[in-house]
Image (cartoon, rainbow, N blue to C red):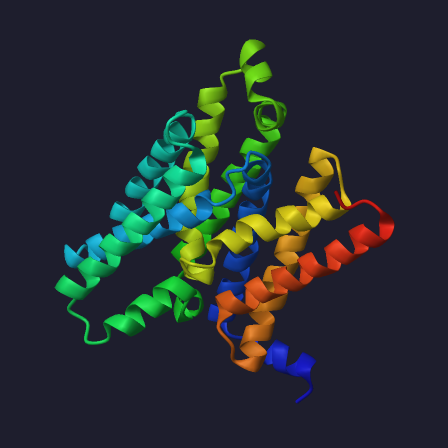
Length: 282
């Protein structure tokens, strides 16, 4: 069969279509959230929260909770708010707070899995969680609908609160002086980011989530200067790289998460070269 016929054959299976739909919507959400996070120098919050989600997953496994989302989502959301508050503390800067929470959560989660796990292959379980696994190919219809619902919420937040998010992203002090509730909008972004990070764990794994947040935003900033243009291009590029990565991983039998990240990396390199050549790159 030709490569095109091969792709059509694979897409005749529902689980492959589900994987593509989830990949598209998650990459769209992470790209939209990534732009303000990168501009606010808070891009590694995705890394910190993904490690917290890993720790929460270990806790739910130890407690033998059937639906781990009952534990993972609340713990990750609370941690996002705590990170936000710590980042505003002059004694503990945002990057230091993320680093402290990240390494602590990772260590506690791995320790719990080693002490209390009932699985005979702890290393395999941890590796698949950190770097992504076949979970993206075992998605149910409910998983797909959850991702679609969260994507609609994120897009709605961007459309409805666009001006406020723009003001808080670029000059938080001035926005607060003009009456904008900066604390509310920062918390809103943190909470939505936490939920999207939890969903993205199934796509790329814990250690690779930051790539979905950072690369599309940085790639767009190589070519565009306006906030709106960067958001639109980052979203389009992230979705495109996700589709390419998923299809390539199926055709050449490579890990889904790693393949998507490599696609994002190559796209960033291309945007960087184009930006340099055109004199747009900052």
